[in-house]
Length: 368
Image (tube, rainbow, N blue to C red; front, side):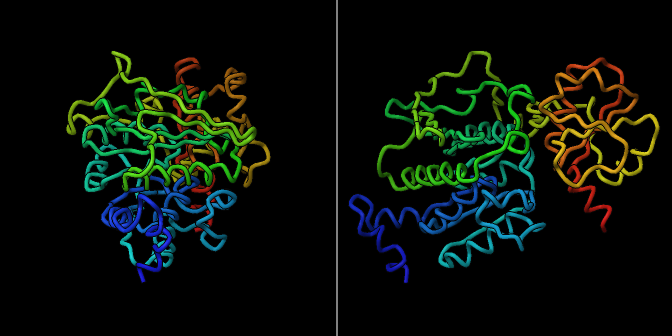
């Protein structure tokens, strides 16, 4: 059965049975089962990677389905990691698949990634990217990174030595996290549905090349792809990070470091509240609710509120005033960005909150 399943690999010059055996012996962890993670998981499972791990804390949402093609309408509301694992087991019952429905953070990252040969960064946030960068560097595990934005994608292979023995990582490109409003996610800016499929396939290709030893891998290179004009460019990554670049020096230091605060600025000045806390707080006259979604996003917030889309927040920040400010969006991502921007740029004084889980969490709470 296995010979027939992988017969086209066996026939490839330079790949053959030995290449397939290397894939079957490999342990690959995919962090993020969204737009990038779906094609990466599907092709690595089909290729016969022996052990696949999946980490994702999110659930399938209707807005995911135009690009996250591993999921169906009937999967809405279910944990992505579990749905993905179940479908991939049916796709290839010869491999082992493990999954975790949890968020990666500094306290669990070493335990979750430490036993794998290769990590696939299919995340959509800077907290996870910097955390994986530092953890893979300390554990000496190769990391294949990809990111998407509207019509463009990026791809790189980190923590693998080139012919001169030099290894680069994400901080060589981006030493520090960007300002929250400088790097909005696809909830705000949109993304062409086929883009993560294209970039995810390239990401899976680099994994197969690295694991089997075929071809030229994007070691210490950054590849960019633009879907609108079919252009692609490959750049050399600086071989040294800037001298003042922060790196945790030990695993203990990494475990103690607050990556969420470091990358999002979330700190004691910003408090996350859940749906129950929001319902208790919202009717108060000293609370100002700020919905940072676009006007056409549903469901609408029933309470009196300001509608200030995140893209216009900088221009309208002076219109927000009150003793307590609560920022709201669809899933909690944009509201956190808005809260952080407000904290950094508005006058000091009000308490600042954001609704963790956003309108999705609120609707689920109200409908229970």
